Amino acid sequence: MELCFGWFLLVASIPAIFAQDISHGSIVVDGTMTVAQTDDNFVCATIDWWPHDKCNYDQCPWHYTSVMNLNLSHPFLAKAIQAFNRLRIRVGGSLQDQVLYDVGNLKSPCHPFQKMKDGLFGFSKGCLHMERWDELNRFFKETGAMVTFGLNALHGRHKIKRSLWGGDWDSSNAQDFMKYTISKGYQIDSWEFGRESWTKRFTIIYPTFFLFSPLMLAIVVLGNELSGNGIGAHVHADQYGKDLVNLRKIINELYKGSQSKPSLVAPGGFYDEEWFVKLLQTSGFGVIDVMSHHMYNLGAGVDPKLVSKILNPDHLNKAAYTFGNLTHIIRRHGPWTSAWVGESGGAYNSGGAHVSNTFVNSFCGLLWHRLMGKVVLNVESHASPFLRSYAHCSKGRAGVTLLVINLSNQTNFIMNAQNSINLKLAANEQNISRDSFTHSLKKTFSWVGTKASDDALLREEYHLTPKDGYLRSQTMVLNGIPLELTSSGDIPSLNPVRVNVKSPITISPLSIAFIVFPNFEAPACG
Picture 1 (cartoon, rainbow, N blue to C red):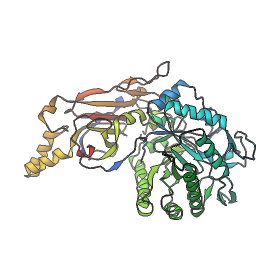
Picture 2: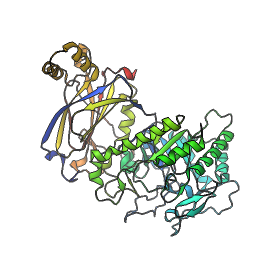
Picture 3: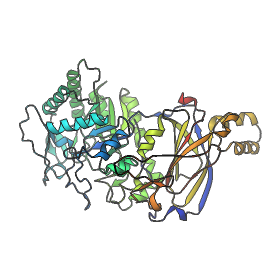
Picture 4: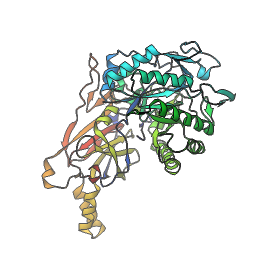
């Protein structure tokens, strides 16, 4: 499970219909080799701990959506989760390192979070009653969710100075909680240590948006990432590694003989090379299963330039650089772990008002889940950097699915999808002048099959645009049809348009398109 992306004007109110420019080009997909691989749970969500009175920049977007008070009987919520078939739900967030569990020998009173001036992030410690934990697990079972639970990693520590915390982690309350969870037969896929979230990970805030655009509900928060210099609180890497060794021993002991031992995820903080390397070295072989980091590449939600950042390809490219550095240190210092991007909703501190829950910050998660397989293929294009292209083997079927995102507010891109195999064959057959080779390429534009019988084949296209061309619209349009839940909370049909496989692809300004090629020859797809 790897990277997740957010995409996306300079003038947000200008409808795409006023665009004047047209740019022609080609997109070449190499289906001969795998360049990366995601897992089955690439799209995930978080249920956070924030109370309804968590506010930033004069906005209080959390409402009653926390672990403590989320309405688990809401029909929209259950249907949204079930649509993903084993959606990973992470229970956690910034306040998880202040959560006590009302079980075992807990000596502190079990009170809800309260605003507290000197508290971490302005709140007191909170407490999870086991009755609520039982309700949550019934909900997880009914919806088929895969659960990751973030444990309190500050319990027992003390503040040394400023945001630095020291001392050994007190594992007693967490251990009692884990014992209770096991005794009730609740299935936990992974335990995380300290604040951590998940790839393409989003906080459940507006269930209706979740069906079409998870990033619409990614009103993300500034969290207590404990790595590096931390945010709000941090712990030295050697101490953190020591505590992880302790937690690994607890997990191994509690799940001894179990056929489904949960994974251990850490540290879930902003990437700091020196700190991450030291953590791997201190914890040692086989302790951490998943190494995760957070990406808030848009900065604070109050930034008035959020929209222009979203639509800036150079700014978006920084995410790949950070993730590349993480994978490099894992290969070198901890090859037994997997690299995950944790929280990546874009803007921290509860997101940006009228940005984070709108089309401009969108990415259609359900279509990704249905169309994009695990194998990632290489894509090359000489088009403008404002046209971003990605290709995967199609999910559950033959062929390749192309994802194309047009960040430009004025350019229509008319592109021809090509198979690198065909281009290589054409080059070998011609092997003559450059002019002749160029002529050959023009003849093969938009053709991705290899047999004459392919002529009658159609491809599927899913074009996503904002309603009325307004980037900050909260309604997404698929192939000209607004996506709206039915009165009973059912998901509308996500139907493609079918186009001759040989015809060029037109990508409108400020739009997202999934293109499914059913007969694309790609040996890497098996």
